[in-house]
Image 1 (cartoon, helix red, strand yellow):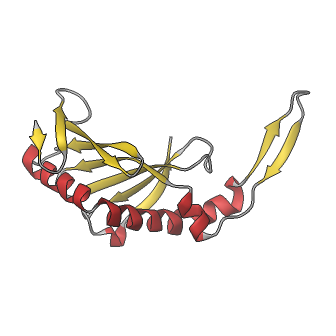
Image 2 (cartoon, rainbow, N blue to C red):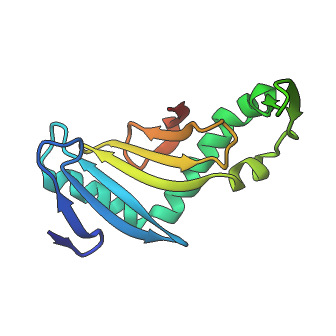
Length: 154
């Protein structure tokens, strides 16, 4: 199926997503997962199209949520770890604490999921800050990110 904003949408059957679009965002392609939930595919596709039209703005909002919710978590423990040495001993590593700007700069949008007519999730690569976990910012109120929250996944 072809959509004017989302481009080619690959519709799936019996998988997690009812449809997946791949769009160009900055230097990379990102996946937009469409999950109907209890809505029609068209309704969810409309929300996905709105997200893509406003992606630059919503990405900035989502990153601010991630900074607000997770920067102190990083600065108060995740920035320190033990690294195994060849002789079997452990070496303590302490990365510097990050400012809000530095933390935000480490986040790169990987994909977006849109569920039903209100749920939006942004998935970020975190440049290794959280040791292989993914940063997820979720809004249960559509494009209104006032009550959005960030968490670690994986």
